[in-house]
Image (cartoon, rainbow, N blue to C red; front, top):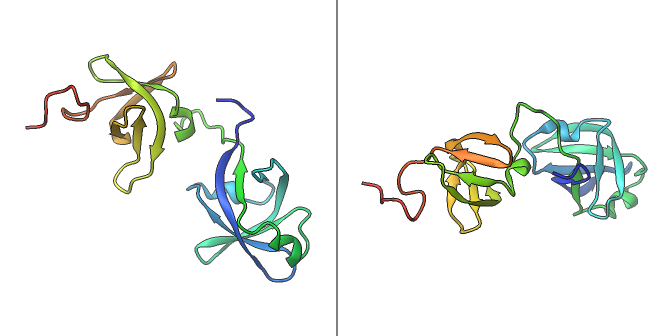
Length: 162
């Protein structure tokens, strides 16, 4: 993945108060994305630094560098927030899987991952032929290949489930 790639982490809601605070809804499940000192970006690549952040109802109340008034905050309402990917070699991030080839438990290539759908039971890897593979079947990731151990019936050319 390109080190300059930014990932969507949330959306700015309406202003809160008169001093430029904003209500932010995270789309990331990592609350650290919105901690004080974090650099965030708008779609235009304009950079801000979070100067304060605290939980607020189901969202966060955030102050950004350079935003000091309600009027300035109103201009940011509805904007998507982006951040650089987090680095943790022990974790396989969703953005690291997109573009990788899937190899089944028999060693057969099954296609490329084009996106990942959030699903309450298990996130789903979406292949270019629209095959859906629950992430719970992911066994390993090496050299841009995602190895999966799936039951019969996941891939169309396999025998149907009994």
